[in-house]
Length: 110
Image 1 (cartoon, rainbow, N blue to C red):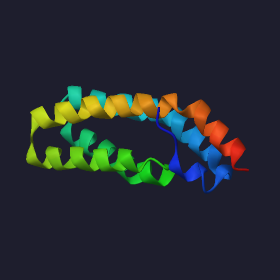
Image 2 (cartoon, rainbow, N blue to C red):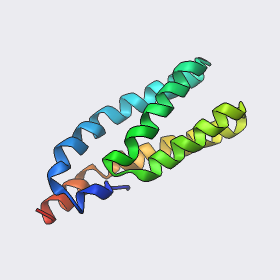
Image 3 (spheres, rainbow, N blue to C red):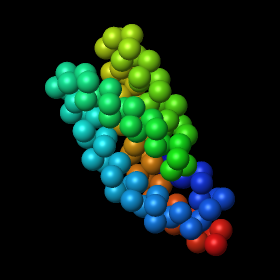
Image 4 (cartoon, one colour):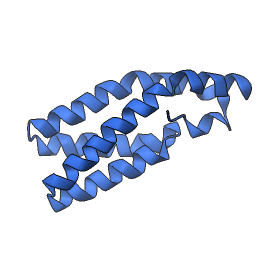
């Protein structure tokens, strides 16, 4: 389970984190679909968007992973992209699994 790092500093952002959590499965699925369909432009754009917002929602490790995927997209390394996408999907599941804990952290730091 992965929790948002910003809730320790600003527990009032829990509603914003919840909105991100609601959108994350859709973003994950869109990224995977774009990759499966070999829609490289869409794939690259979606990874770039998530890289930009991950850290802002308290998930810097998601930003780092998306950055790593971007490098492999530029290198056209299909094998490395595939391995990183497996890691990405696992990380998304761990982030989603942290939802209840995010609320506990926010409540404890109010």
